[in-house]
Length: 253
Length: 224
Image (cartoon, rainbow over all chains, first blue to last red):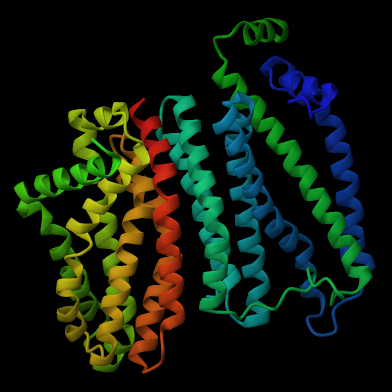
């Protein structure tokens, strides 16, 4: 414990307390929304207006400004959930459980958006709404994993037990994600190769890349806003009988 | 009693229980055959079509049979309280759980090998693929039991866990399905399937070590 600076330690202990977190999330919300809207506006302006059209795909490539950030988020949220699951299982931290639960529907939403936009793009490009390609299939299976987490949480009545179950499932799932990814890749590949993660020289022009990265950061902020709202609601439901919620209700009433 | 004695005692007990309820033990087997029989009825009996579908059909059916038999892994122990006794015993839960999973596989997974030749013949799978089919079943059905055990342990406390169980477990089964049916497919085409078999074996070894950990954590949560 001594390696962690006292400031960080105090921050963690404070934030882990539900009333403090609730108030903090409430205070952060307008700032996060502001940053999100700025980034979104800049990203959309750059992506839909400034960026040139693609010499092969014409204008329809512009859906990547939604599709790619959503697909990144679908994985990012899952990994984040696994981290929170680890914290929840090891330290029994209530707030990690709440954040894990609050993230699951949002991650499922991002996965769904990635699938739908991919299918919309696929219709003119591949001539079919759905193609059994590796990455599409992977996203679909990821969506099922998210739905499994959501429905398992809904099925167990005791919330703490449900959170433990979901944590275990999220950890097992995250071990499986790379396995599923590579097995599906092996199974079939029709999707275009990675264009951005190629480290030496991305095969995307800078004028297209910058809006894409802006959108990716905007999506992260959107996730933060959504997850904090969701976590506040979950906290209220869990702590409905505790004193601070009663005080809060009296104040707003 | 040493750990290994406890481990084998669990296996012996579960096998004995299964032996006393012989009629139930045969059910996954009948289910397996029945599902395979449905495919020609649904897609038509063209020999070429069936032959090319055979590896996939057999493996999807094996997967469903494994899924259906999963619920029995901890159900009766949960109902009569022996699961609590397992949790309270001085032996490491992971070892006991591994014993239960292995016993479950011996009862529900291993018999699938017996009917595999019959089904392969039903669907016109070339004889040269038979050995590979057997190998994939030997390697991958324990994998199904190991991965499935995580799902069962999470849902055993629920009254209607069946649907959720399949939602939890089937996505995790995808890699097994891909490599197992891929191996049989390659063997049917006269190609070497070593790579797929090696990967399945690697997954089996990893699951043997790793799967009991989440299973025991989940059982502790379920019994609570």
